[in-house]
Image (cartoon, rainbow, N blue to C red):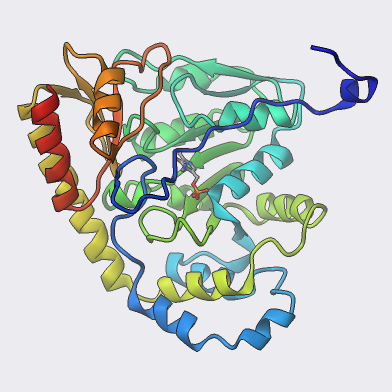
Length: 354
Ligand code: PMP
């Protein structure tokens, strides 16, 4: 292809491919780890009562409404909280802020496929570290010179949860790097799974969470990070050098309100966890091999059958799951845990296909 001179200076990247968002509402959508339940009623009331003349005004640049609510819910002071437009925005800001050396940033070879995209777009050198044959992290692999560390816990797309002790071992032995733990799915992993308590002890640990999964608000786009005042200050300096008003007023209000209904939150999270455990049994009965997921999705292999073919056949039946034709994981499907009814539709279809 002919390349113009002006194109030589273009920042060229291969973008991340998000899961498909079909227009057809009859699709059983188990492909992007969304929550099958709506947000709590309080969010609806906020929307109903919103005075549209407020739209004239810029939002609070520090997203104060939301930051205050997060501070209260998580018992963390305001200056230890950063919010962004989904955790993708938060993670991208964190990459830009903290991964700024000549040394390679480390992350697992099987992990969230946005990490290498951010590394490429920001020209951050990186090295992927192989997981073991059970898709687990070997913490000692991360005790080596590096320009930073990032991994999800539970990991995606495997759902494997590593212990707080293991994460602490990595953080403690990397005092010269920032360690980012992406806890997008942590609320499905049970009490005591989050590394949040460690931020009191380590000023180089950033814990990132989202409203997209456990709080049913993927469409509103709210993510947040918690860490030492120093980390948050550095991130805000970068963020305010790019765009002050990333989070709109309505999102701030809806997010703050969603945090107030803890009962609804626990109820829906528990329902998803119950459906996940039920689905593990059902998939095993159908002959699937599985990783023990602690998230709101399952990483399952249709033993002896091509995962790619099963993916296509499910698609024909309007059931969407996620499949990557990539080394190591091409025998697996990632299946979001939906309602029990949606899962039963999936199991019925799988019975016909297998
Ligand atoms: N981290 C991980 C591991 C994810 O799977 C996702 C969802 N694609 C995200 C972060 C980003 O989620 P969001 O931007 O919706 O908060």
